[in-house]
Length: 186
Image 1 (cartoon, rainbow, N blue to C red):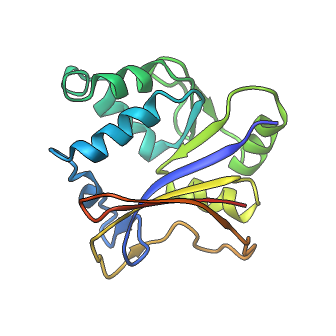
Image 2: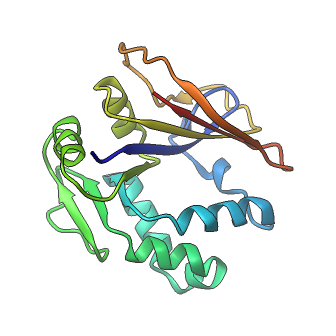
């Protein structure tokens, strides 16, 4: 059975966006060799990527550019070749190569994809999708990159979640920059 993993950046106080829906605070890794090496190693893993429309548009806008290929060639190559799914009610067709548009309820679609044999799925960003999938018990692994910043308010990944899954810590990695990667499994 296909596993569903999620990866997201969150602030120390638990928000993935600030009060203005901005995530630029989590993009300050320029020059952080340790973090960039981690990102490159993750990009070499196989699997399909899953996005909500807003995250998809933001990610596609960067990773398809020559600047992305120059700055992080391994990651850009992996992002562009990986199979991708985007949840959207407004997109009719995805422009990014190897991307399928899913228009049904995210929980139904991911439940269907999990039952099929195929690559594991990783939800990147996409807080509202993560919230829905967590509430439906469809996420197998949670990877949270904690950034040492306090936002004070914003959006959390698990708004409205009443499932309360008990998670088991699988690993913890502390980066020299103060970022901490937590990997939990259900």
